[in-house]
Length: 242
Image 1: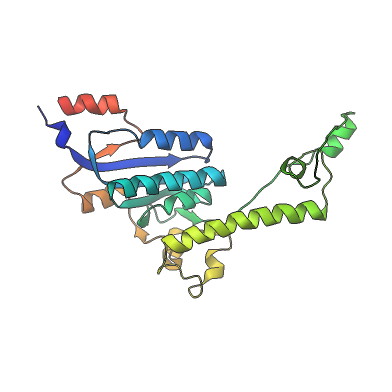
Image 2 (image 1 turned 135 degrees about the vertical axis):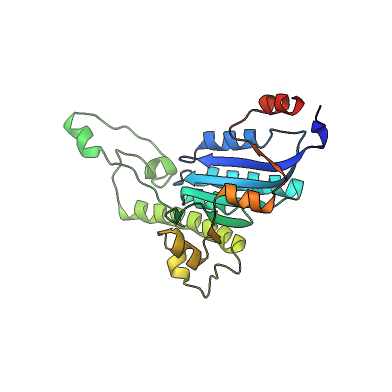
């Protein structure tokens, strides 16, 4: 029988799809698996176009907290796309890699959109009743039946700019020496554009093109990979007893 209490391995964590509160719940749940296995490293696989800025930040912090708790490195790998909040989460890695030469990376920015259905509602006789203590509270800003004006637009843009500034701060810190805010094409990096792998490498958004399988095998050839996102701890527990 294998001595599973002494097992050490590489943990693999996957973050996929649009980032929501459900994504955060899944990540935090996955990170609690395999309590009786000692992690040597965390391989973070990202395939996301972004989503909630708040939950992207929470996921980023959860991954960094896990890494610091266990004193292990994090190696990030982008699949089809790691953009906006997806790239934010990817920056939890100590090394950043693109799985393919056509992976899309970056989009360091912030966006908000909402259809205005005021004309449509009026056409069908829908009456709007809305009360607020301020014309600039959040519900007023995102009210689809509200009247758009310059004051509201200015307020929303200031909110988005604050979110982007936080994004830029995280990227600048995590990619320090690779993306230089006052040197290496900062306008090309922090303008919300997305880039294919070759240009992303040139700009310092990622380090190299390498798949998670290649990277883990090269760095940890003797260690088993434990996929936190796809295998339950019960299944893995049984496997270690066989």
